[in-house]
Length: 292
Image (cartoon, rainbow, N blue to C red):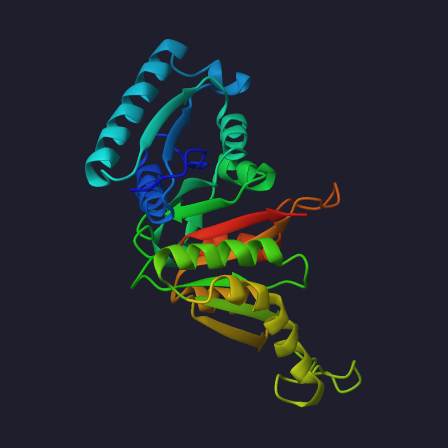
């Protein structure tokens, strides 16, 4: 396999759980497709308030090393063409993951799922990493790790108003190109009002001024269509609630991609309600891409 010497790795956080092992499988296939190395990491230190009642640090560290070694051996056997390394990090999980993620192509984490209806069950570590990471974070629910790639469905990306949408769009196209998949670019408009004395409803695409929204969507993806000419693109404009529209699109997808503003008001949540809905209910892996 041809590998760029300075290629940034895909980093996956391991904790020994089946969910993190599923995430590692997804990350290994992604590393193979993108021709980059894979880094397995475990941040074994606990927050002070938790460490007081946990196992002795030496025992935790030994267990973590054994889990890393086992996962590395398993992945090297399954994906011999992927360079795999493992690192035991003497930091807490959030600190270690965010720090390593900053020097990575992406950060991949497993999420505990309770069936297709419940979707992701996010823990505090996952939420803190998603809200703090400066690199793309992909959350992989056990059972969804096989979906990205040829035959696994298209890559769905939610389109915001330019220029905010550029970074997530580029990630979606690069992922689709690596897997030989297509991109579905989705722009969601607020549902028209049904109140007779309210504001004038926004026309549906194809009705008068509604032609403006398909044009704006086409402009948002134009650069990436030129950069990735072999990636089939479906441009999808729909009235509705963004979370519901994207969840419907994600039901047939291999990956769904959304953006996250890195500069949000101090009192606002670090993840928007659309990201939360996808992370809790999407049946496929979810990529959250930070951008200014």
